[in-house]
Image (cartoon, rainbow, N blue to C red; front, side):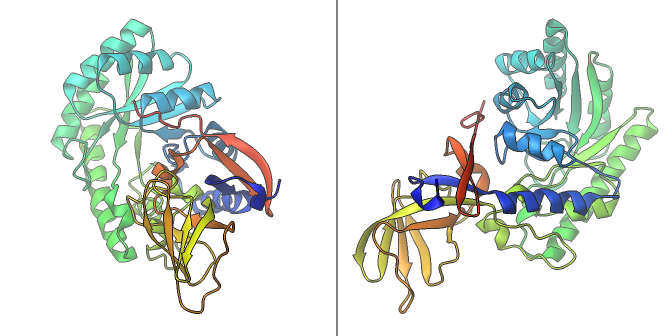
Length: 362
C-alpha cells in the first residue's frame, strides 16, 4: 500500500528519518562516558524500544506502571519508571513486574519508601530506587543536598530496595528556545546533582548513577560531567514545538519522523480547507501542527474532528480528497491518540507497529 492509499487520520512514522535519528543519538554520545536510557513515554511502543536497544541504549524509561508492564510484556528487560508511584494497587503491580525484569522507580518521600519496601517484600522482589531531586522544574523531587541525603539513607537501609542513585531531570529546560538559556539552566541542575551526589557519597552511601536529561538539553548534561545516564525521548520523532528551539552547531539536530496524515474533507472557500485531523488526531497543548512541505498552508485552528487550514493568496491550494502530512505540536500526547504507527519508507507502507501502551496512564 502506498501512503496516499492509507485511510485517515493516521499516525505515520517515516522510517528513514526515524533510523537516522537513532544513529545520530548513538553518534552524539559515543565516547562521552554516559549511557542512553531513552524515554518510552514518547512512543509507548515495544517495537521502537527494542530498536533503541539495538542502537545502543542501556534500558528505557517510562512514567507509569502500566507503561512498564506493556514494555516488559513486549520484551524489554530493563525499565525505569522515572516517576513516583503511590498507592497499594500500583505498588503491588510494580513489585510483581520486578520479578520479571529489572525495574527502577523514583521517590521523594520517606513514607513512599516504606510502602515500596513492603510491596517488594510481599512480592519477593527487589527494586532499584532513585531519589528524585528538584533541579529547577518545581514539580516532583526533594531539594538538593541534605534532604536528598536523608532520603538516600532511608532507601539504602530498606532491603530489598536498592539505592540506585539520583533522578535529576529538568523538564522545562527542554523547551527554552535559546540554546544559551538551556545551557545555563542545565548548568544549575548539574551543580545541584553533583553537590547532592558528593554529599551522599561523603556520608558513606554509594550513589552509582545520576540520571536525567531530555532531547532539548542532553548535550549540556553530558558536557557538565555530572550525569552518568541520559533520558531523551522525543529525539526519535521530534515535533513542531522542538522545531522552535534554537539548535546551533554542534548540537545534534534530529529529523521530523512523526506525522499525522489527514484528508481534505471540505473546501468551503478559496482561502480555507478543512482536514479530518482535529483534536482527536493531534495534540495542540504545545501549539498547532505544521503542514509539512506545503508552503502557503497554515493549520489555523482545531475542533474535535476538524483541522482548519488557511490558504495564502497565490499558494497552491489542496483539492477535496488530497492528503496532507502534519507535524504534530507535541509528539507524546499525539501518539497516545492512536492505535498504531503506519511505518512508511519511500512512500510505501512497510509495517504497522502497535502502540501497546496507548492509554496506559495508571
